[in-house]
Image 1 (cartoon, rainbow, N blue to C red):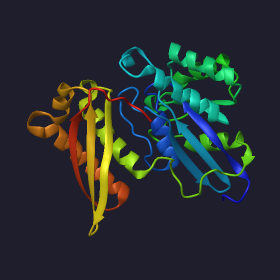
Image 2 (image 1 turned 90 degrees about the vertical axis):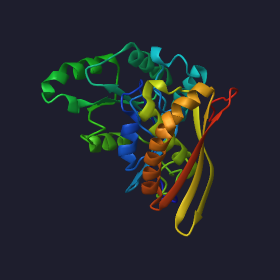
Image 3 (image 1 turned 180 degrees about the vertical axis):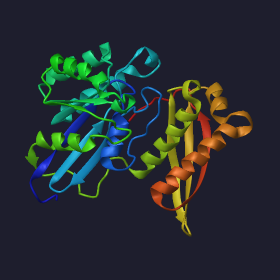
Image 4 (image 1 turned 180 degrees about the horizontal axis):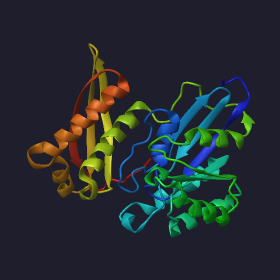
Length: 289
């Protein structure tokens, strides 16, 4: 594929928190390249998910969600840069909104997209929540009046409903050019990043509001011996109180999260995994790319 001129380009997948951006990207790619939780701002840096089929390569940019009142403790300046960077790279924008909900954050994002003059597709997600589809027709009609979208596509990223129509639409608006990635590449992130993010996902899902955003997971080492992959992970937090939360009473939280992480990494690597982790306190820690 890399030697041919095909339909190929970058697609910025943008939206406010919890509208389903990472779920959509993972479904389109066909495997998990971006972690998913119900906690806003789970995605903290842009993650590429790459879709290859026939003579098409779609490079999806999964971006952090727009900031809300619940995300005041985050490094807002840094997170704001990620969607802006995605838009600067993009050939096309896919904007996600939640069906029957149009909030100020959605309008703010749309205003910013329109400044770029990029073509845009509106994806109305989570339609599976409405058995009676007539209840979403007014929302689709009003969305069409908000801007000049190339297309408006209702779908369910979680259930995979109407996903093929979205792929066809994306391909329609991509340029003809040589693809940047090989046909077997799924993401720009290496295996260490994906393993560390898997543990961060399990921590966020387990602890939810108790868990601080100032949390970093890093793979310290990964070695294979006799068919078993030995992985050591550090969980870095800013306060000793956060360390106690993650470890839990008699270590039960850390053990639970470690087991869940190990099982998913074994599926990822298709190998037996021995995983160990430790929680470190670093008051000067900064979240970075």
